[in-house]
Image (cartoon, rainbow, N blue to C red):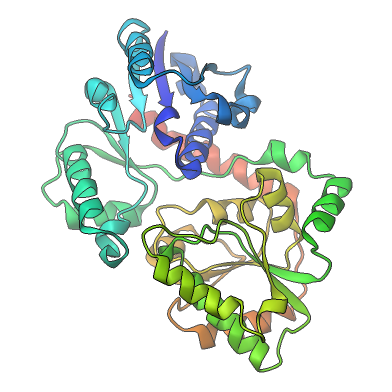
Length: 373
């Protein structure tokens, strides 16, 4: 049987890439045609191997420890060239990845460096451009996570020769949800001091995630005496190595006298803790300026949460009936929207969210059939 190799080793510095691979494997496993024709093989490092435990009896998992780069490259080469691998999925064009380019299926999460170049150094833009151009001008398949990303590919690389397939993904979080007991929820509440009503902003603090509009909206709400009985909960490390001045700007607002008592900065939290926090929130705010296909929104959809969502093209494509769009450049409008939605009573049905997750994964896997033809 031919194999599809999912290489999680190229994403060790980016947890979003690891979860992307998990979610794509989940969709593949919903498709009988794929599973009957291919053995799914995963390369993953020991630190992240537990993420794939739910698939342990369905795929072949090769766990790597602290092997040096040469040994790791040789192990990958042996698997690809001697192990019957037909496709290398989400291939990263680093030095090792280029050895397997002829078997590669490429994935570009988004074109942020093109849409928001002010957030990148010239060196980083040049590196991304060279990498993206090499993929775009190849004959190997390119998978994109949204039609908005496909539009960007056609706009920025109009001469591209790679065949393109749009494959949405869902967040496969059913195993984590099943672990969320009342006892765990209570423990998370006590650990982080979440005793009041709260609104949750889950993203890392990269500048394109646009926390500035959120903290400005919070400042407007609290200085006008609105929502003083609410907390605003942030997870993720308060840092952005590319834009330290932006972090200083955020801190100056979040630490101001009128705001600081209603802000909870929890830092990096575990996945189950994060989902507990999301589940107990009144609603989620996702103010991002750029996404490929946002995992935060997919998590919220499975948990059947309501989301205030920045009005950008990909969010219009991704949203469901429980999402409300707002202008990501207008803190005054966001403040009013938060105040309005804080007064609403929400009904949530996680079972309905899980059913929709399976239904959508099955649908998205039809596009993966075309990728693995």
